[in-house]
Length: 68
Image 1 (cartoon, rainbow, N blue to C red):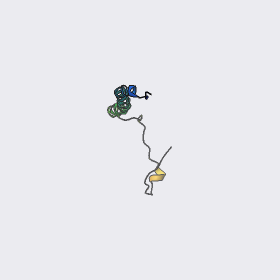
Image 2 (image 1 turned 90 degrees about the vertical axis):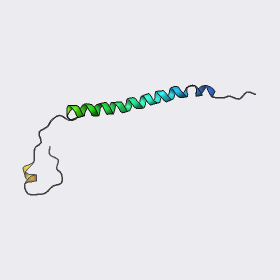
Image 3 (image 1 turned 180 degrees about the vertical axis):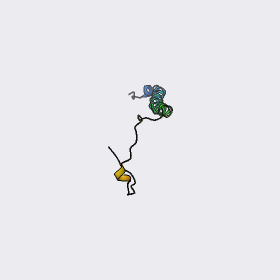
Image 4 (image 1 turned 120 degrees about the vertical axis):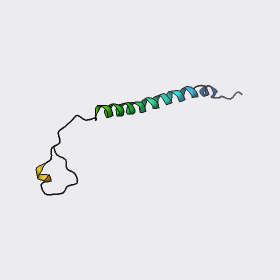
């Protein structure tokens, strides 16, 4: 009786490895290119004027505050 082998799958191993490395490289290149783009552009957020709440900064020391 002839046993079944999966030797045909071994031929696809190098192809699947290259395809996997391509997907990983594509995934990381999106983050690297966007980081370089925002570094050259000057930030990922539009310029907003920063206002300091006078009541908060009048006499108390605060670690952080969020103003609307």
